[in-house]
Length: 361
Image (cartoon, rainbow, N blue to C red; front, side):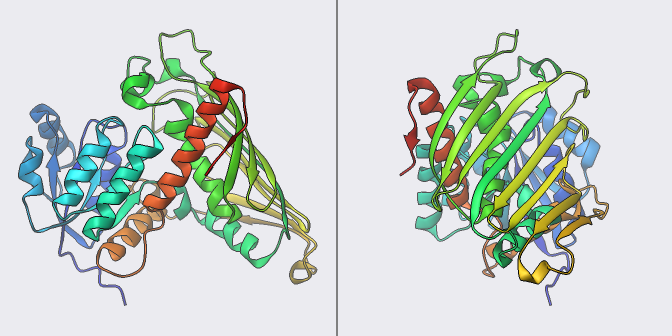
């Protein structure tokens, strides 16, 4: 049985990222994490975080070298600006820390590859925060595909729309291409590109895309994107992402600020769901003999409550990473997954720029 006795020392690197305090809640709620060290260059940010969420925090640092010198730290969750991430992730790995990195790890696939190379050279785990893989709806959809419920894959449809840029502070670094490296595709669309790969058990091998900046604000990244995908199996797909919703409120913790649809279509049927936020229901239509007693099915999932980032599913996502850091199994999402997604995103940007379909090598 997995021992959850509090004994592990973890670090949270970066407190000004939009997801940092959510990661802090996860570390605080995980029973196996006994203590937390924090790093950020801004002392006032550290002080505010400790005042708001000081449980388990035993040390704070404004010097990255200081926190990385602590040999008792097993792993770090690192959430920093996209252009700064590769150096900080690599330094942490070189210091002997397993790293759960906020996506997209680097501004480009080449940046991600460099971090993977460091992790491999030091024999350490590199995870990436694609927490959709922990969602029970997503996991059940993958299981159904693996069972053959939809037969041979024919097509995939995915839509991920969220609140407009005006609700998200257009002055934030997320909307500056020099720092972010991209917009809706690299910041949020990456989650759903990974979800498509994970559920379909297939790989995207070419992309034709159009991206555009339609916001009236002075941003330098795309806020809408439309991708046409081809998969290794020969199936085709589409993905539409955008900061487009005008009536869904504001804030990064806005659970109604999304319009999501995923459909997996095959020779024997389809799996699909739609949601405003994390999916809680799943529908199946199947002609597979294993489902002939009820060819039409729907399932409801009631997430267990937790303050962790992503709820109990988010706890399990980080717990799986901790187990991998201890030498048991692999993370739910690792460096190779981050690289595969980054290559798709890079290909989409190249396709939009050149007007050509781009193969992913």
